[in-house]
Amino acid sequence: MTYSALALLKNALTGNRNWKPMWREPEPRAFYDTVVVGGGGHGLATAYYLAKEHGVTDVAVVEKGYLGSGNVGRNTTIIRSNYMMPDNTRFYEWSLKLWEGLEQDINYNAMVSQRGVLNLAHSDAQRDAYARRGNAMRIAGVDAELLDRSAIRELVPLLDLDTARFPVKAGLLQRRGGTVRHDAVAWGYARAADKRGVDLIQNCEVVGIRVDNGRVTGVETTRGFIGARRVALAAAGNSSRVAAMAGLRLPLESHVLQAFVSEGIKPVLDQVVTFGAGHFYVSQSDKGGLVFGGDIDGYASYAQRGSLGVVEHVMEEGLALFPAFSRLRFLRQWGGVMDMSMDGSPIIDLTPISGLFLNCGWCYGGFKATPASGWCFAWTIAKGEPHALNSGFRLDRFTSGGVIDEKGAGAQANLH
Ligand SMILES: Cc1cc2nc3c(=O)[nH]c(=O)nc-3n(C[C@H](O)[C@H](O)[C@H](O)COP(=O)(O)OP(=O)(O)OC[C@H]3O[C@@H](n4cnc5c(N)ncnc54)[C@H](O)[C@@H]3O)c2cc1C
Image (cartoon, rainbow, N blue to C red; front, side):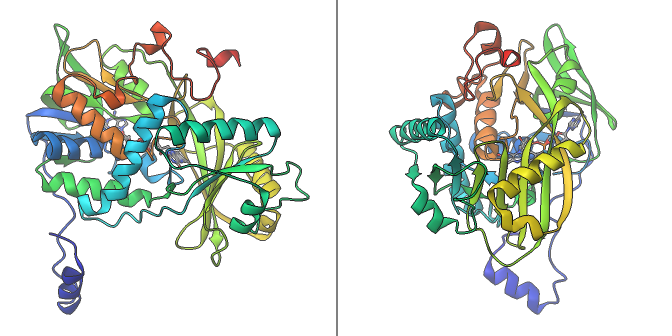
């Protein structure tokens, strides 16, 4: 059913008894053209664009839990395209453009809010680095503004600019960045993919990948074997475990990242603000809670919860920026498992196994990538080769040395 103001009125007048379920609950069939492993944002978007852009509708998305139970429903909802390396700038800008038209495209209110993302600089060197990044963005046609202290004061009056331990020197603002309601993205893509004929199979864990003579033939699942001509992995934090089922060892580590939500308060923060002297970012949700987070826990783990040391760091960094928040109570906290690549950039590629495709390495920034990731992965699966937008996100760049070093940490992150 199509959502509209008219549908809302009609259903309100008939006691809201005629709303249809958002998607079907089909039994898995014996064979599909394409099986997508992982019903997170990327897997669902991939299935949607396979159907919409390439007419491939004989598709199943196989999810071990419920749709959206992974990182797509656990992140801090920030979208932006303020990257410096050309491969990333192009790709994330395409993603932002897709976000801008997404709600009309999938007929679903994902609460896309382009409220602006402000990165704060706390030293002269950092201000120079942000100026350089902003220039690179503008040359690539992406919006960026370097703000001085007075412009920042006007934009975010609650910030402690004067007495802070890490004084604010400048800020890089991307006004088109912002937030999107994360669960709605999973639900919207799921509904839109189902509408085009994709089977969404929940509570169905992939426990093996069958390969015959170097060619994938299907997946073993907790609900039986499902044959497939093509298998596309989009298992985010569990990518290494799933790829290992096909004998692949990925250049990834899985780490926990935590998120926090405070009690709801009146509107006090209109933008997403990030702290440059550590790792802290915050925005205010439409319900009034402050949604914030920091760095990964720093040890490899598959647990969807984090440790207290990071809670303390995040609170300290937040209060260094916004002392007024010290009187707030924080209500909720959770963790998600990140698929950290060594250069901070993702992988969307074919694999050495014919018919097996790979989408992973999203680190803590894959939510904003959801539309472009699904779009490019669908292209790569349908055409059997990467699109120009993901042509740099190859698996072999870690052996060839062609890393996309967004963090400036060099090819061997463990040396820094
Ligand atoms: C706390 C936190 C904050 C974040 N903040 C941001 C942010 O503000 N902005 C941003 O851009 N990114 C952010 N991220 C990162 C972002 O959420 C992820 O990079 C992105 O969601 C990963 O893609 P996905 O949505 O497909 O992952 P997921 O939703 O995790 O999807 C993968 C799915 O695969 C399923 N799966 C795994 N193994 C199997 C199996 N064997 N069989 C079947 N299914 C399987 C999982 O159950 C899961 O549902 C954050 C992440 C966290 C945890």
